[in-house]
Length: 75
Image (cartoon, rainbow, N blue to C red; front, side):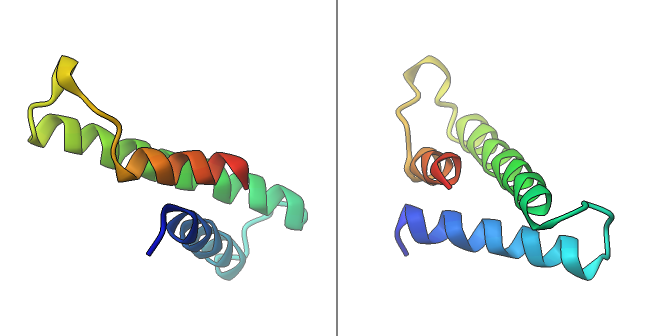
């Protein structure tokens, strides 16, 4: 799976969740904005965990999750 495909999958998953939960997000555009923010939060948490678990700190080199984050931001 490419970073772009993962980004699209995450966004789609969060949009479906918002619709299933019958949240009052107003319209499809607003639901997409909320889903995008949720996907970015999830990816940021994965990046933080990766840095922590691998003890990367100052030596951190962007990884696959950074590419996924960039793709989410483009959507």
